[in-house]
View 1 (cartoon, one colour):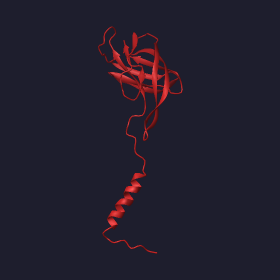
View 2 (cartoon, helix red, strand yellow):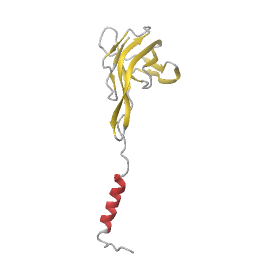
View 3 (cartoon, rainbow, N blue to C red):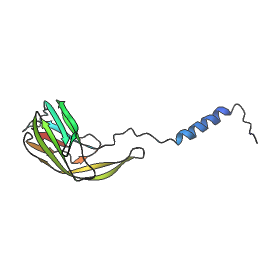
View 4 (cartoon, rainbow, N blue to C red):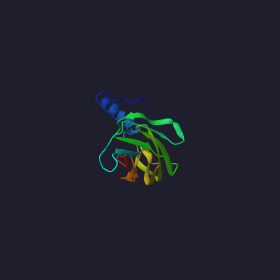
Length: 156
């Protein structure tokens, strides 16, 4: 049996079909979904930002994956933490002097949205530094999330 639709209703029916099909398509995630520990560089003994001439950063045990390779005059660096561990370490070369940083933290899942899914946020417990070029590390915000807030200050 054939249904005859008047020409006047055809555009309306076509529009309804398009809307139904489009409503079934998944939404797109446009938010940042990875949490990074953000570290700013400061002059020792002050709260004055002091970008180093150059910074190289890579993970301890992951020397082939360079996060920053001789970055010039960075005001900050963003470091990834491992959600499947409670510790993470980095080798940081500031102005050709090498130091190591180790972080102890806890991680917990966080739902961003239906479209973006789940990411991991972190709570920073402590920071250890070898003390060659880095004088001290101050924890400013122990909550590491996707909001790009400064978490630590590196005084050198």
